[in-house]
Amino acid sequence: MKFLRYSNLDKHICIGMLDDNGKIRKLNYSTIYDAIKNEDKIIKDWDGLEIENQDDVEFLTPVEPSKIVCVGLNYKDHANELDMELPKEPLLFMKPSTSVLPHEGEIIYPKLSNQVDYEAELGIVILEKIEYENFDEDTLIGYTIVNDVTARDLQQKDGQWTRAKSFDTFCPIGPVLVTNINSTNLKIQLKVNDEVKQNSNTKNMIFSSKQLLRYVSSIMTLNPGDIIATGTPPGVGQLNKNDVVSITIEDIGTLKNIVK
Picture 1 (tube, helix red, strand yellow):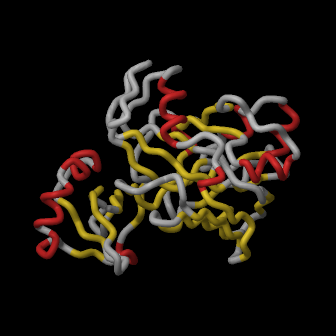
Picture 2 (cartoon, one colour; picture 1 turned 30 degrees about the vertical axis):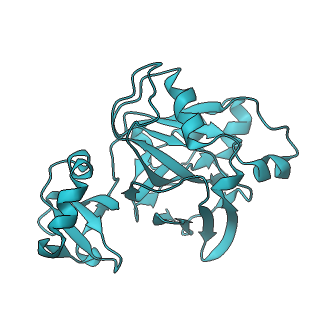
């Protein structure tokens, strides 16, 4: 099921579900977590739910993470592209919560950079707290789409990744949060101005979603809404002002943003 947060014509923040026809079904819940816990009731009441048109709403990020934990070099085909050895354990870095941007939001090209790159990624969404060193296989999670936007020239200049990854608007996520899908075999594709730049499958990931959850939670507590960005496939490249970048992941949807 595809859950989302949005602002309606009255500027009220709402929780909804996206149906197969692209229509938004408004849900009577105050948080996306409450809605997910009541999937069975939503299905039962489906025909009576209020319908809203996508053109009449403003998409919000499906969650408001306290942190975004990112994984570097997690696709075999990306490692091959770079002629690098496969890592023996996940390589982690973080993006701040202030970097998040919703579907159709504007990625702001920072004045400090001359090379801003796209990186299409599957995002794991934490739906219930995972205490430090207490990961359970049955922990409730969801999935979304992440664009790990990066100022590549600053990353190379600094020798570490914090500044390059942390600008405001450098973490588009959304448009929806999806539950109950198999994350091990999903097509992932990125386009810039409708031209395919990245095209792979999550089956090429070195560390699976469950492996990443276990590893990250062995280091830190994960709160509801936190996101693990699972790494990017080959084909990473540069964005320019006025480019439209879209990421499509099978069974989730398409995240689209414009560079300004």
